[in-house]
Image (cartoon, rainbow, N blue to C red; front, side):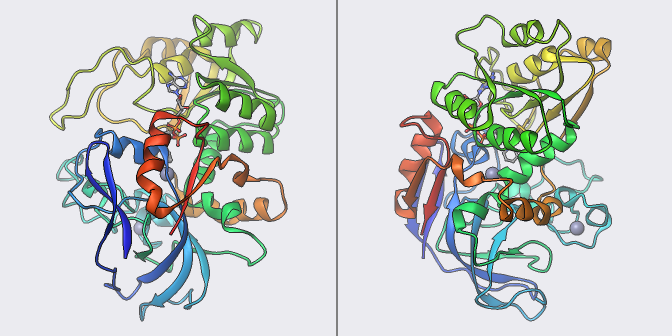
Length: 387
Ligand code: NAD
Ligand code: ZN
Ligand code: ZN
């Protein structure tokens, strides 16, 4: 089959690789009908995450048609159309029972998990995301093996198109979890750092929850304009104002917003310090977006962080956070937990995640897609690939 494979920093290629096969009774084989490129894929593409091997198949946002099911699969049959969550969870362990699917302690055997001390179990395995997270082949491919099929894949009604539901696999639940973590409610004020797909999904979900004012910070005019037109955000271009946080404070009677969402992560533009800091050879980050989020949030407010962090963050303003009595919420998304209610919101028209798609490409053009999404050129907002 054809699949997008990793060969080194900024070197991904669509190659012919062996077809996947069922390996475990709870596996299914999926024929992929649509898959997307994520900001998290860019961390791999840019060589910022250790633990990838030459030829690894990337991709953790995908959906398709069930081709084959293992003997232990009770929820699905061949021919079913499903969206697959990027987190692979067993549904039965200590964490899954608490709906903390991204912490599932049975799906990642830990062999690649150098991030964890010997006595701490690794979190859940993920598709197409380094051997630290289980090294499970991803779904930017014609076919993919989906483990734990009794917990993850969500059947989709025929009436909904692939584009409408594909983002249930990751970015829509991620934006939603960020908004729930931020405790957004009718009348809330919110600052979202990063107008990428995750920031945009957060804006959509914040509107759903009744947020009154949403500030959005980025430096791509096209993304900011889209967010202003679509979600009514107040755009702040960080190359054009001295200090985005100050602009937000001034616009909120010198209090700051009720909550901030950092939808950027450790590769925030504006990072000034680039040192190899840890034994893991993860680069430190100046955490510009996180610093701004702390500065823009009012006393007693919440900083919600869906953006991915790794390694140390320089000059983390812990004193400011303490002085303001802030709360921090963060982490990988417990995708399975939010998929059913979000599917309902899509079905009744309250959420229209497909509007953020800027490019539909063939899987064979995936390498060009990575380059466009990496450089944010040609108005690239979100790319969907079709095998
Ligand atoms: P993206 O690269 O398309 O978007 C990031 C945006 O942030 C860009 O538009 C960029 O211009 C902007 N930006 C950079 N520095 C900034 C700064 N200092 N202030 C404000 N904006 C800044 O990526 P995406 O797909 O939207 O993903 C965003 C983040 O969310 C990534 O770190 C990704 O790994 C993470 N993510 C996390 C989860 C999870 O489970 N928690 C799931 C999906 C994605
Ligand atoms: Zn993703
Ligand atoms: Zn589990």
